[in-house]
Structure formats: structure tokens, C-alpha cells
Length: 230
Ligand code: DC
Figure 1 (cartoon, rainbow, N blue to C red):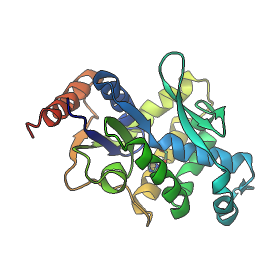
Figure 2: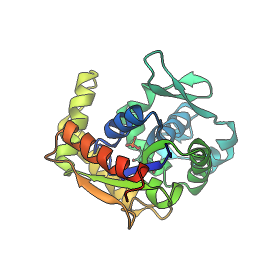
Figure 3: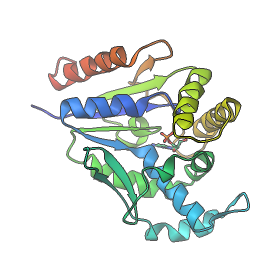
Figure 4: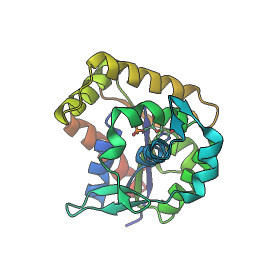
């Protein structure tokens, strides 16, 4: 059967990764969480004091980019987990501190160039579902299926807050809402590869949709394209 490329973009905490993973599992495709790659670079910057005293030292980070090696490896349960220089950082990249710095880091063109190059290599043979902010516009502009996910900021912050609470993080709903809104602002207004709906992307607002409906809607779109019906 012919393999296609599926790009899933959208605002933060719209559930892109949940549906992208479901699709990849169902289709036997590779799943790539491109946000995890920006988060891993952010963690590296924090660990190496390129973020220090609330300041980001862009030039120093850019000079250190060749030292950063990123790869996804499958865990025992089959989940693709992010490795930074050989260390599993799947959990460490999900903290509020990383979430607060990741959007500024993602505005740096040299960081984007490095990650886009890796993403191209990962999707080289098609059969990939990649989620992020610029996948349908910049990384794979020829993807056969492009989805743009959306939901209200309050709904998204509520989902993220629940996740962080379940992990035992001590954050307030207001802090999470502020982080979500601020990331939307930076992601959509940055100069290099801002978050935009690609012209040929299909928009899905899942504020009121359950996960099952969302999965089946997108799976049908994928099947139509794989079969060449669209
Ligand atoms: O999907 P996420 O929330 O884990 O992504 C974290 C940040 O990384 C997001 O705020 C913007 C950035 N990002 C990006 O600029 N381009 C991508 N393709 C993926 C993520």
C-alpha cells in the first residue's frame, strides 16, 4: 500500500500528539513529536546555563548546537522517547520551566534549521505522522494530509493543568493558562516559520469533540488519501 506523509499542526495542548500517536499506531507509521525536539534543546540550554538568571544567551547556545545530538528511541512499551546526547529526557522535557523557555528557543533560526534537517531525514521514506507548528508549512509542504488542530485557550489550559496535577506539579490553573496564551503569542508572531494554518490544511476544532470521534475523523481522511480517493 502506498505510504503518505501526515502533518499535524496547531496551538499548544490541542491534543495533536494524542491523535498523531493513535494514527501512527493504527497505520504502522513512524510518529515524530517535533515539539519534543525543541524541548530537548531547551533542556540542554538550561542544563548548560545558556539560560541563566532569566536571560537567554542566544549566541552561546548557537555555538554549542553541534554538541547536541537528538534521537527518538522506542521504550519497552513501544513508546518513542526523546534522547538528548544519549540520555532519556522524556520526563525532563515536560516541566513548566522547559515549557516557559521553549517558545523563545524555537524563535532562533539556527535551532530551527538544525531540527528541520533532522525532521526531513526522519520523514524521508514517508509513512510518517509528525506533529508540531510548521510541519505542513515548512517541513513537509507536500504532505498528502495536513491537519490544523484548534481548541479554546481555556479548554487547552484545563487539559494541560490536569496533566501537570496528575504528575504532582504544583502549578495553578492561571499559571498554565498564562503559559498557553503566551506560547500561542510567541509561536504565531515569530519571524521564522510562525504557526500558521497551511492553505491546504483541514482545520479541526476539538473543544467539544471526544478523542474517539477525532481519531476516526482524521483516520478516514488518511485512508482516503492512502487509497488515492482524494
Ligand atoms: O508541541 P509542544 O507544545 O511540545 O511544543 C513546544 C514548543 O516548541 C512550542 O511552543 C513551539 C515549539 N515548536 C515549534 O516551534 N515548531 C515545531 N514544529 C514544534 C514545536
